[in-house]
Amino acid sequence: MSRDNYEVIIGLEVHAELSTKTKIFCSCPTEFGAAPNTHVCPICMAMPGTLPVLNEKVVEYAVKAGLATNCEISRDSKNDRKNYFYPDLPKAYQISQFDKPLCEHGYVEIDTDEGKKKIRLTRIHIEEDAGKLNHDDFGGGSLVDLNRAGVPLIEIVSEPDIRSSEEAENYLRKLKSILEYIEVSDCKMQEGSLRADVNVSVRKKGDTKLGTRTEMKNMNSFKSITRAIEYEVDRQIDVLEDGGIIEQETLRWDDVSGKTFPMRDKEDAQDYRYFPDPDLVAIKLSEEYIENIKKSLPELPESRKQRYLEEYKLSEKDANIITSSKYLSDLFEGAIKICNNPKAVNNWIISDISRILNETEMEPIEIPFDSKQLAKLVMLIDKGTISSSIAKKVLVEMFEHPRDPEDIIDEKGWVQISDEGAIKDVVLKVLEANPQSVADYKGGKDKALGYLVGQAMKETRGKANPQMLNKMFLEELKK
Image 1 (spheres, helix red, strand yellow):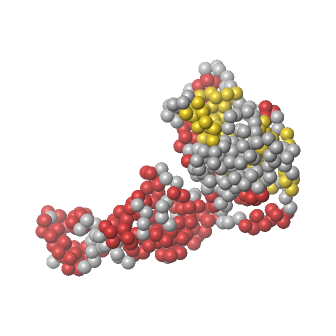
Image 2: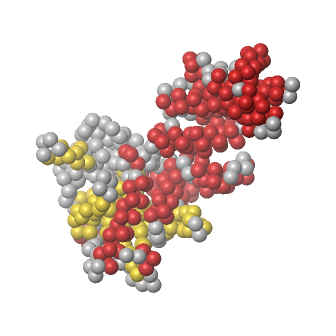
Image 3: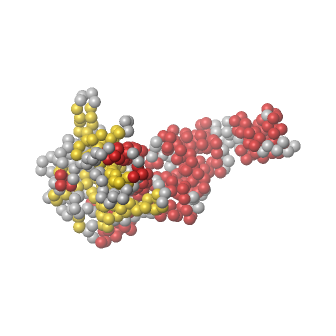
C-alpha cells in the first residue's frame, strides 16, 4: 500500500452547543451536569399537544457565528423536521434546517506548511440536540436522559477541502477559537459542547470524481479525530488495493483498539423526509438586525494576533499559541494591564502554563487562577520577593491548590533571601566545599561559576537572590 498514489478528502460537520441560558424551543435551563431528567418540561419531552417557540438568542448566536466565519446571512430562513427514530429523540423527529439555512458560503482560514489555506463552509444552521442514552452494563439495558434534548446547536458544515488529519485538526482548533472569542459556545469538548462528524474518502491521484465516503459520528477530542482519520484512510486504501469497494456507512471509532467499526448504512438527505415545521413561523431578518450583530462582534483571533505582533513584539509562534484560545489571550491581556511586563507574562504562558496544561490534559478555560494572580506572580519576581525558580513552584501550587501567590509564599516560607550577610555566608561555605570548581574557574573554565551558583541555590533551597549570588561569587573568586 502506498499513500503517495492516493488523495485524502475530508469534510467535517461540527456541532457546537450554544451558550444560551435556556433551550431552543422552551424555557428549560441548559446547564451541564444536572441529575438526569431534571431539566425537562412537556415541550422538550415531546408531550402531545405542546408547541415549540423559537429562542431568539439562538438566531442571534448563529448569525454571529456566520459573520465571524465570512458567511452570507439569509434574510429568509425556516425550520424543518428531520425524521428519524432513535430512543433519545422523543418526538421521533429533530427540528433542524434543510434548504434554507441561516448562514451559507463562508470560509475559515488555516495555517499549513504551504501557507494560508481557506476551508470553505457550505452552511451553518440551527437545530436542537437529542437526549442521551446511558448504557447500564450491570442491568443490561439503557436509560434515557432528556436533559440535553432541546439544547440549541449550530451545525457548521465544511466543503470537502481538507486533505490531511493535520489540516483537520488545524481547522477544528481555529473554529473552536473563533466560537470562544465571539462567546456563542464554551466549546468544552469533554462535556460534548463541541463535537464533530468526520467524513473521509480517498481517490487515486489525478481522479476528479470523489470516492465513497464513510462517516465517524460525535467525536469530541482532537487526538481521537486525528487518530481516527489516519486509521480510516489506511483502511480504505487497503480495501481498494485489494480490489474491494468502500461501503457508504456510519462508523464508530473505538479509542482503545484504535479501529473503526460499522454502525449502520449512511443516510442521505431523502432518508430523513424533511419538510417545513408547521408549528414554527419563518425566520425573517432585517438588514438593521444583521448590521447590529456585525457591530457587536469582538476582536477575532487573527486580528488580535496581528496586534500582539505589532504592539508587544511577540514572535509569530508565541502569538499563535496565545491567541489560539480566548481564555489564554484574556489571561495575557488582563495580566499585562496590571504588571506592564508583556515579555514576562508571555514567557509564563508559553512555557510553564502551557506545559502544565499539556501534562494534565486541561483546557485553558479550566485554569484555576485569574490574570490578577498571574500579574502578581510576575510582580513578586520583579520586586525580588521570590526567585524565578521559586515562582515555578508557586505556579504549580496555584494549579493544584488555587490561592493567592502571596499566601502560598507566606505559608511555604519561600521569600527570597536578599540579605547580604546571609548570602555571603552561603557563598563562603560553597567555595570552601568545592576547591576543584574554584581551581577550574581560575584556570579559565567559566562554566564552573554556574556550578557554584547552582550549589548555593541548592543550599538555600532556591531562595537566594541569584543576581546577588553571581555578584558575590565573582567578588570572592577575583580575590
